[in-house]
Image (cartoon, rainbow, N blue to C red):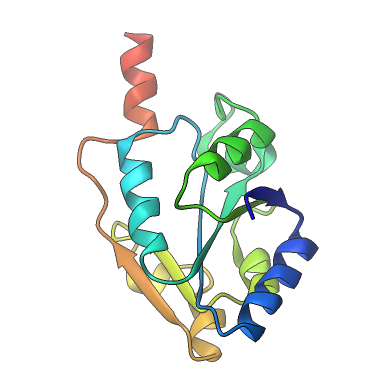
Amino acid sequence: MKRVLTKAEAAAWREELGRQGKRVVFTNGVFDILHPGHVRYLAEARRQGDALIVAVNSDRSVRANKGPERPVHPEAERAEVITALAVVDAAVVFDEDTPHDIISAIQPDVLVKGADWPADQIVGRDIVEARGGVVIRVKVEEGHSTTNVIKKLKG
């Protein structure tokens, strides 16, 4: 399965994986200009379970969080690129400013975020831990960020 799903499709797929005894991993982000930091982060996330669902911020959500100059690429293209990675099983676009609702719908076993997020500020931690899941903070690759790539391109 390699495709972009709706929230309902992602939740149904997660339920099916759960019935099969599979451990479902969830992470989210903008993934605007894919770089090695993203690839390494997603590979580490995938190692935490049997299937990886990546929630991609909608264009509206990116503008709300990153400002009017972002995103560089539209949401459908960002989700398409993410699902082309071998470590990603599915993607879903979410429109809210935080991933709380999509995490609530999917109910993953593992929630992965970058270690740059303080543990007590990870959105969805309450949902995942309430059902016995775990939250894993993954090291963020130094020197890799979309903001820095954009700054380089602007010269």
